[in-house]
Length: 119
Image 1 (cartoon, rainbow, N blue to C red):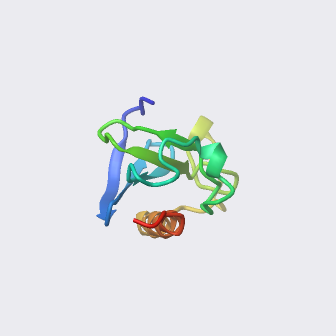
Image 2 (cartoon, rainbow, N blue to C red):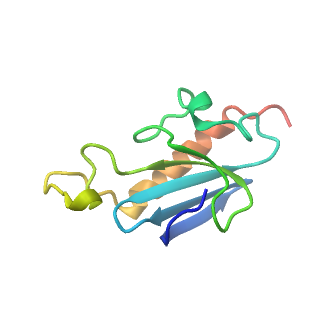
């Protein structure tokens, strides 16, 4: 998948898992890349969505620009999220901070680790 131009807000690595938080200008997105020996490697996100709990559910699986690893992603453009999509925004919507999204990435990594096969 080709992402439109984006701004990288944060990135890091926890063991073999890489993570990244980006802004598309309208809303943030987050990605966690998993190791090749993980049982979910190369799976479609909808096949594992019931196993990984994350804001709005997983919305992406595959490779993203600038990363050769297989990633799962999700976005913050759901009902109740502050976004600039289609020029609409509400003052009551949640404005996610980068720190909150990073914490969610780390939580997702913990969930992926719980499915690791014995190495």
